[in-house]
Image (cartoon, rainbow, N blue to C red; front, side, top):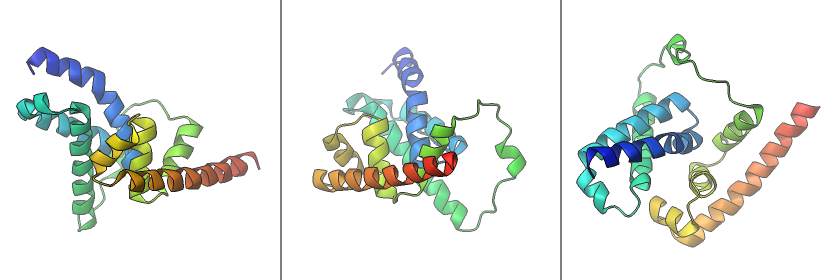
Length: 164
């Protein structure tokens, strides 16, 4: 992959992968940082990326693993970042429905959340989700079914609370 091809890949994939990682981890700033780092690593490993069947999945997996690693380091004792710094960016406020979906996703077990994001937001077929998360297709189907049922209940509760 040459520089122009990589630039095209980055331009066409960055926002989509960031949205997917954000849905998995629930922190937009962290998702953006992890996806940026994943693309830096992708550039360093572009020969491997050329051979990858799904380069976007490679970047998404690296970004997700970076997010998990960062979270683990934070839990081990690093103090919380200054709240003033997290509001430094000027981005449009998310819609109420987007906030409700992200909040509902945060309440799902990690495996269900990841499966739902990869299948419904990243538009991966079940077999591709199974390959990416390293689980059998039947397990992924069960995660999707349970996750959708839980999300439906959570979002119905949220909608009822909003209209009450």
